[in-house]
Amino acid sequence: MRDYRNIQPEELAVDHYFRLWKLSNDTDAGNFWKNWLSENPDQQDLVDKATYLLDTVFEAFDGISDDEITNEISRLSGALEHSEEKESPRRLIFRPEWYSAAASIIMILGLGWWISNKYSTSKQNNLLYNQIISQIKEPLLKATNETNRPKLVSLQDGSTVLLQPKSSISYPQAFKGEKREVFLSGEAFFEVAKNPDQPFYVYANNLVTKVLGTSFIISAFENDKDVKVAVKTGKVSVFALTDENMETQQADNKLGGMILTPNQQIVFSPVNLRLTRSLIADPALLEMPIQKQSFDFKATPIKDVFEALEKSYGVKILFDAEIMKNCYLTASLSDEPLFEKVDLICRTINARYEQLDASIIIYSKGCTYQNE
Amino acid sequence: MDKKQRILLENEILLDLWQQSKAGDSVAFCRLADKLYRTLFNYATSFTSDKEYIKDAIQELLIHIWEKRQTINIQFVTIYFLKSLRNQLLQEFRRNKHPFLGIDEIDEITDNQTIETEIEENETYSESQRRVRLAINELPKRQKEAIFLKFYEGLENEQIADLMQVNRQSVANLLFKAITTLKSQIPFLSHWILIIYTLIF
Image: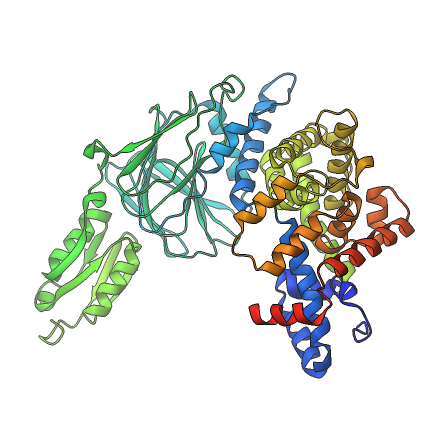
């Protein structure tokens, strides 16, 4: 190891091992430097100065936000796709107004919310969808719902997906990377386990939905023209992965970027790249029972609680109604994933559960009055 | 793991994405671009403070590299992209496609208005950080570029010399001048500012 005692702050600031600690948060490097400092307390000043220099340089050169980068990359993705379709690729020049507007769409992050979107699927979109799937290194599992009832799919991170009829979803067995990424065709209700460090992305054709938590709906069937995103609670982040007709639509660059709050919806028309915001005028948008379902229970008999869950999630919950006839639940459940809900319920009534295929089995010794 | 291995490993990951890109995987290319974007963008701010101009330039560069991917052989990914961006920017400046100062008129201060706007936007920064930012932004462009490559990217003087197409001694001179200026303008080596700094953190 190099002798760090006799160097200048600007030398220390470019030392690789020092940068590993400061810039990459490397644990080994961190331990080394903490040790080194405790052995060389007189060098605290040196470390402070080098740190200050690094912070300063990074601060001074920090000129672009994560969202701007995301937007530029999605712009690139669109352009690459475009250039591949052509015999002689031509470079696309975009108008600045267009993408500064687009950038602001991306900024929205959500807690409890649902979204619904519908839009047409062209061959190019399918192409891109396949490309994104091919980027995932882990083998993807695919669940398809060919029944006419919702089908529950549980993901490795604890998130659940209520897959609607004629829909399919591809997902990795385990989420290993920085992002949790799944691919939807059709319609599904998501309840995403909270993990701000590993945001959850749903790709549905040319629309990307980013989630930090927790619940929302996407519908992306092939025959609908417009994409609709509607927010029930919280905020959402939705952006186009690519846009067709970009070149011809250059002149029309009014992509109104906006933040969606509850009871607002956004309609995205892939044909003319227009985004319009409005209040949710049509309550018929709330088509799935689970969207209307509130899980507020006040001294509710447990069998009614389980019935509500069965109905909403299309799962079978097996329990001994006789033993549990004295069990009541007072709880306000919202957008936790199904199994989290069941777990909470079980804790409350002193029971436990097991998941078996599409069924949930509840084991309980019954409730006494103390348990209410 | 020593420095060289670590850098090789990082380069390895990028190279892997590049190889996939070369084979025609545009999504891998987008991932690669995503990993490099911030560095490229921030590097370009050494040349101009026009953000939209930079975004367009990078976009153009990335598409160009994508289209030419079959003929490009890359050994060190980040350096290759930085160098390509530099060449492109300088070419465009020479062709005067952009009403910005050429690299030869480097001692001019960049767009002050932008700097001030940026600073206003970031009111959370302390007074000392604000001054530091200003001081770095007011460095002559080549010094600013050298500072970026040295302290932001952590490159060796030799790599910087290669990128900036000057000899090593010139790099050392540029860095020396820049650091001297920074030391005098922002006394980050003087006592009182460190006391402030310690209080903040």
